[in-house]
Amino acid sequence: MKKMDEVMKLAQKKETKTIAVAVAQDKDVLKAVDQARSLGIIKAILVGDEEAIQKVCKEEQIDAGQYEVIHEKDSQNACLKAVELVSSKKAHMVMKGLVDTSIVLRAVLNKEVGLRSGKVLSHVAVFEIPKFDRLFLITDAAMNIIPDLKTKKEIIENAVEVAHSLEIKTPKVAILCAKEKVDKNMQATIDAKELEDMNKEGKITDCIVGGPFALDNAVSEKAAKHKGVDHPVAGNAQILLVPNIEAGNVLYKSLVFFSDAKNAGVIVGAKAPIILTSRADSQESKLSSIALGVLMADFKKR
Image (cartoon, rainbow, N blue to C red; front, side, top):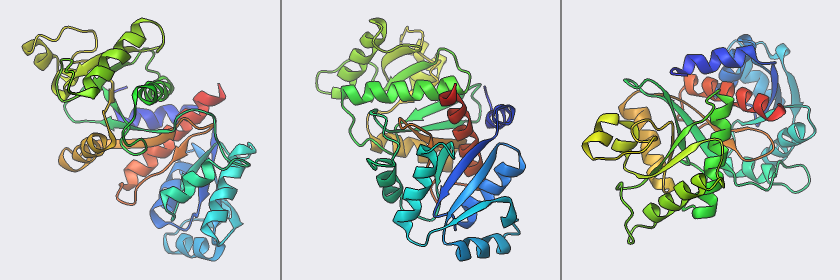
């Protein structure tokens, strides 16, 4: 895949999935959900203040009759209900509406109705970047603050699942650092070498892992050759593992605001996909994130 349009086209080939929207009275989220429904990739259950939902639908000329609406004014209870719909198999994924991310995640981790799987939760962003011939998966820009070696291994495994849902059979994973050589004073470079070794030893599978890489020689063959970096991943990376949340967040937002890159994002590691878009995300990004969620839900079902 090279374009975000291909993500949507692939989602349209899958069985229609049901999405539970928590605190659904959010204009931009409802517009994205309605567009996704019109494209045939989802049905939706809207959980939240029914009067507010109906008002938004009327203002945005959305046919509320197309949706099941579950009335729940309390945000925490609405999130719990949306998550319970997924855990009880009445929906395939949950999406955040007009509510703080922390409240949604608290519901996801609820011991009774939540979606705990025992795995690390991590965010995977998929980017279409101008001038590049492939999609990039960037992780983790939103969940894990300073991941240790074990957590980085699980973040890679989560991202590989997303890559597989995009029909990338053996993704190339670059462990990003500030330099492409192991430095005893830079823990990220030490972790990178250990992760590469884990891959060679079969402890991380279904991908090719390399590191440490600076960003330039991870994504540019020319830069890799210039610096003498010889590795199957060098210049050909598809998954970019960042060392910490600051690096991931800056890279993510730089791509969005400096390069007009198209993007989608999903939280993985739970029993079902979790779509937590930002209010600053574009309408197109929200729609693409739903499509990515559909692909992940289909992958988990299989």
